[in-house]
Length: 147
Image (cartoon, rainbow, N blue to C red):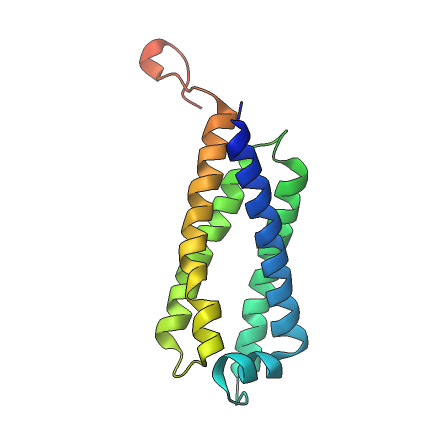
C-alpha cells in the first residue's frame, strides 16, 4: 500500500507532467514559430521545425503514458515505472537541449532550467510509489521468486 503523502505527490506530479507535456506538444507542433520567438528570440531555419516537431511527438507519447498512468496506476502500479522511464529519458533530452542550443532568451532560461531537476524528482516519486505498491519483495533465499 502506498502511503497517503506519496499518493498525493504521485497524483500532483502526474497531472502537472501531463499538462506540461500536452502544452509542449501543442506549442511545438502547432505554433513552432512562437517556440523559437519566445525561447530563442529567432525564427526557425532549415530543419529546426521538423526537429522540434519530432520532440513534440515525444512529448505527445509522454502525455499519453502519463494519462494512462493516471487512469491505471492504482490497479497496475507498473505504470508508475513506465512514467519513471519517461521522465528519466526526458531528463537527458532537457540537458542536451540546454547544452546544444546556441542562444536562449531570459524566458527560455527560466522555462528550461527547472525541468531536468523536476524530471529527476518525478523519477524518484514514481519509483518509490511503484516499490510501495508492490509491497515487500522476498529474496529467493527465502524460498520465493523475487518478482
